[in-house]
Structure formats: structure tokens, C-alpha cells
Image 1 (cartoon, one colour):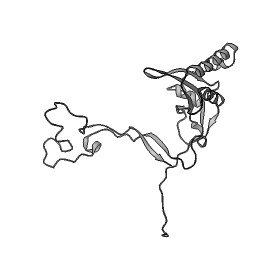
Image 2 (tube, helix red, strand yellow):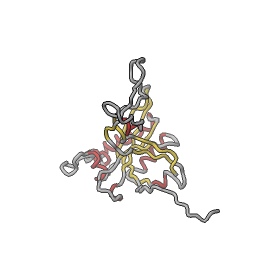
Image 3 (spheres, one colour):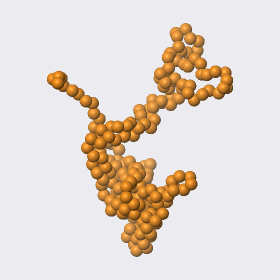
Length: 217
């Protein structure tokens, strides 16, 4: 029981609620999963629609203007009901399309991020119903994760461009008198097999890699 102060390093992530704007159904084929049908909500915010354009200010901003009319007229409604029914009938995996709310964050960026999130637990019909009930509604982080739960964090590492072997793989530098440079790998393998093995350190892209960090509380 020492009286020392303890300091623990933490990373604080701001997580505004995500908005559910669509539902995707997948079916199992012999080649794995295949998208079967995608249904979007009636009202999609501008920050989400920015994702469908390279240059929002120069565009006519027509994305989803015709699609949203489906929700109003009778024939469109009939078609949507048919689509929801077919999702329940044929699909084995249901995912919802969500987007982030950029206006709640202190970033310069206004274009929302979009991703699919898989629904687990319950029957396919209950998943479809849940997704439909939550169209255009927000899902806070507390409804997915609880306090002190261990979660995995996925991200992209800091990019460093094209780097040599010393920086990229931390191989030993060669002695000073080496001919034609010393930040190299001296031997890249035996004569036979007459190929360079993948286990040999070579120069190339360093950073900007997809990484998953496990067990963050």
C-alpha cells in the first residue's frame, strides 16, 4: 500500500451516435456471401449524401431524390414491402448501413463515413424488423458496448511511404566500409531455391496498413 500516485495512459475517443440509413441482405452461395438486396431509408441527410460525390458544391445534389419517392407513392410502397419480405425469406445475413454524424465532431470534414454493421442474434425476420424500426434513428455507442467491456480497435497506421529495409524491417546496418551503400540486406537467400523467399526483408511501403488491436477496455 504505497502512497505513490499512479498514472494510467488512456485514449479518449469521441463517439457520437451513428444514424441507420439502410439495410443489406446477403445470401450464401458456393462462392461465399453475395449481396441480395439493399434498401435505403426515405430521408437521408446531406452529410451522408456528400459521401456519394467527389465535389458536393459543384454537383446537382440529386442523390436519392428519386429513390425517396418510392416511400411515398403506392406502387413504390408495394415494391418496398415485397423487398422486405424477400429479405426475410431468402437472406441468411443481415447488415445495416450506418453513417457518422460529422456536424457533432470538431473536424473540418463534412462528409460522413459509411459502413455496414452486421446484426447478430434472433431470427432473420426479427433482424429485418429491427433495422426497419431504426431507419433514420440514431444508435448510441452505449447500446452496443457496455462499461468495462473488452473491445477490439481497427484502424490504419501512420503512413511513411516507400522505405528501405533498415527503416522498414529494422535490419542491422552493414559496416562502414561497405561497397555500394550499407543500409541493405547483404544476403537475400541461398543459390537454390533460385527464388527470393517472402521471409527476406525487402524495401517497399511502410505504414498506412490496416491493423486490429485486441482487448481495449
